[in-house]
Amino acid sequence: MAANVEMTWAASAAHTRRFSRLSMRGAFWLAILVASFASSPAHAQNPDELLPAASAAKARAILDQAVQGMGGDAYLNAQNSDCSGRFAQFEHTGALGGFSEIRQLWQTPDKNRVEYGPKHNIAELYADGHGWSLDRGGVSELPASDFATYQESLKTGVNMILRFRLKEDGIILRYGGADVVDLKEVDWVEVADREQHDVRIAIDRKMHVPVRTAFASRDETGRRVETETRFSNYQLIDGVETPMQVVRLRDGVQVYQLFLESCHYNVNLPSDYFTRASLDNYFAQTHKKK
Image 1 (cartoon, rainbow, N blue to C red):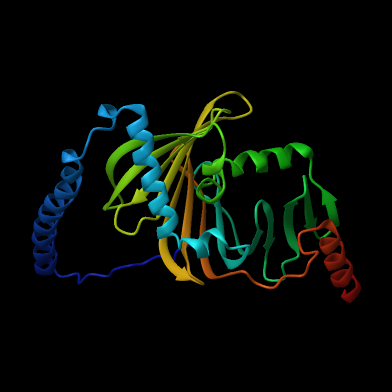
Image 2 (image 1 turned 45 degrees about the vertical axis):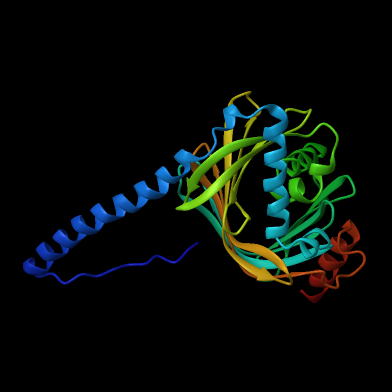
């Protein structure tokens, strides 16, 4: 969780009154500044005025810029990643539900291993059509529905879209217009497929990197759910622009925060690292030591 920042002000009445006047004056100029940012896209082309072919071409150009903004060939050719940081999960009420150290390993195109805790003795692994979990009781296979959910989530992930899905047949692109997101001028692009996945991506006009994604889905009851992901604090690592902070919201309520502290690409990993055998071996070694 991000550290709380507290500001302590002098308690004298004179200082309080002076600060109040300065705050009002600052709020006035801040409002003017925000209004100037918000009004700038008004002169941009209305996306509804574009014919479908022109809208798709504009969207494609913005996404091509995003690929270059993320690192170009270094981004596209990254075969794996090894990132560590802190992970905070929140309840549906907004209260903190859990906090842990995290290590996330990825291998193209869709193998994913996430380890929790300082000893990495809790993990989830998705690869080769299966999912497994590691905990203090050992390794067990996850239900097929869990892997299906994982595969489904990949289809709306911005990295999968930029690196792989744009090459698929049946992908429909549309320019969604200019906007201001977190005081950044962005262009929205809509990406849809034949399976009715419709993802909106906000691309920073200056850095040409994704700053937000949004898509709608249905939960197990059929209720429509809006999911939003925010990316910030980009750092260039091994030639790849990497968001060191990721926030996920569902229907406007925060679900998790991820703060990365380190990240590396194209690292040397054991050949069996994304297999159940690697989890079994790890459990056997730690259990033997105990």
